[in-house]
Length: 191
Image 1: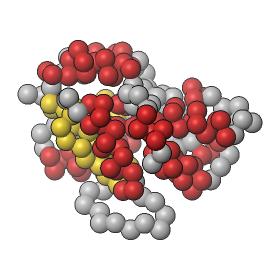
Image 2: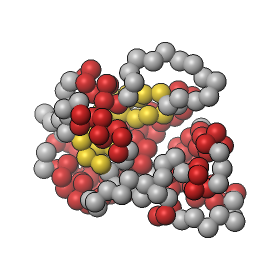
Image 3: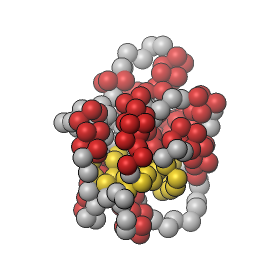
């Protein structure tokens, strides 16, 4: 059976959009739209420090708002229609403090299909943890049984491809993907 590895944030869900809408409510003077968010992390576009951005994002991840966040509708519908044809793995980059919340969200919404959750801890200032894998590519190489990786981060997709694993860039404003969400899901279906 073909195995698909899915990034969680901004692929299975719309974390950046959800966080940004919450952040905008507290910063009504900001004129930036989600669609014009051409950088991730977007702290420079928002006029805040990276530390402030990460603190806000982490607070959102640990809040009830994160657990109430719905899956990306197109992706969820794809899973309903085609998910049973594949084996699925979640592979995300998230700070250790929020990994359990992320796993809970994945299994709550995609547990019918996704049975394993893996993460590469995102670094946070002042937090030191054991480091087993440098990035998602190393995790996937260690597993050795993934046929396709789906992520919104160009660097992750490139590193995985360099490791010899097929990968697709999931379209988001910050990565300028030339494919639509519908086209990406069609490509996945034909693997």
